[in-house]
Image (cartoon, rainbow, N blue to C red; front, side, top):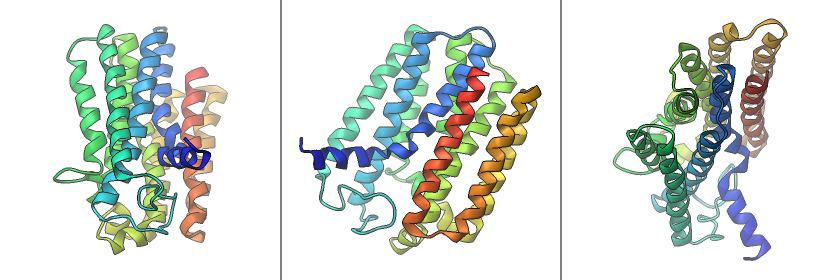
Length: 286
């Protein structure tokens, strides 16, 4: 594979957003560690499932948006390899299915550490990867992308990662999973805010298209406030500086959003993902 082709595949993985998939698992490991029940192997398998599932979702989004005519050359945001002719549609579909298959294989290994019905959660994740971009009612095309992120990057990874290690469900973990989901939804909010004009022109009804771009910075800030309020009681002493730092940085990002257009918003997407990742990492180790 040539260097240029390799770079196209790396771009298709959307590395800026990959901290989002890892943050939920890290937070779940944090809840398990705080209860004295951290287990390395199931934690590693959860990381593998989350990492591979998000790459598969990014690949699927690129392939199905191309197939449905929702992408066009020169669009805002990261370069779309299939639309620009860098990657063939067949290669992208093959990569999607292969990566999703690898995620499912890692998920099957988790049955060694939990009941057989955990397979149903894996099936839901696999269907969610595809339902985000395709099917009779693609979630990302009907203003439900942010809801999907809250579920698949917050509720599911945080709660199930913690439960597979500790064997217990807790209200603190549940509230924390909502907070992580809201942080993750903010990544998609910036993405859809940036792409609103392109999406509107091809009939893709993201939340930014449905409620209008002007509302998105306010929604971003509201998500950050609610997320902070949910987790603030779980911190003590100097640790309370961590959610405070997250909220301050997130509000700053929301204030900058209206001043930027197009590709200039992409760095804010990466910053939002990193803020979520840093919060989860600090929660796990403090």
